[in-house]
Image (cartoon, rainbow, N blue to C red; front, top):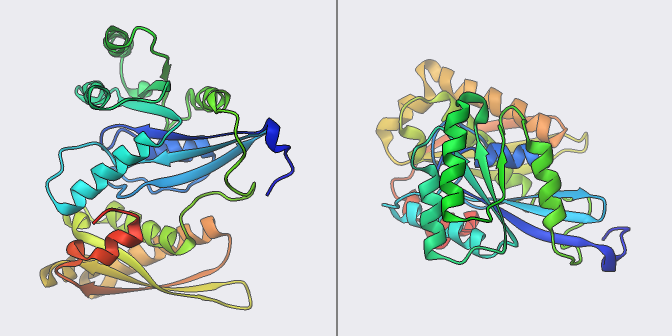
Length: 301
């Protein structure tokens, strides 16, 4: 699996927990120094746990990007929140990500801590420090210490990379002594087919300003590798209502073309190979109640 002596290895799961749009996915990508999870300005972008793997020296860290903590309403909402809590429960290290721009962000973390037992190794990480004043940072620190006198607090900006290197080093130091679980060159636990679908969904979120993206699912239906190293990918963009079709397609197909071109360019960058992407818009009113969808996402139905 790797060249390290297993007796000297360190390994562990670090789960990033926080409210929607706190910057969890941005932090995961920054800590891993590569993109394994999609990022958009919209809340609840992450629907399932994404694991990214980072190796440094004799230590292997698995970062778990969990869906945000929020009050669930639909079946999908409930599955997402359960996925977040399961990822937290199984972690060796908890990274509590607090959005300094949100007044309730820290309180949500305290609510989680009041209902479950956190790992002994835990870090409070205050994000978006580049866009708030120092007195805001100081007030949140005081609130945390009032709840946890021994709290270890890190102040960062995941987007700007401020404090990220120091946070990464600290997490690596906290990993327990244990054999590695993954090959040295593995970057994530999700398949390329699923990552490709997520990349397209990311572009849909970025380019459609309406609430429509929350009712959209992307499925990689066909993946064909060519001898010249390129790949042909057929994806279904699944929507719940026929009336949504013109919004996704755009006038004369201009919107879906923009989505396809942007997603294809991102895939080529990540997969480091030529990609031929084809998108087909399909209407399935009950897709969010389809058991197979939850299974593909690793969610509980």
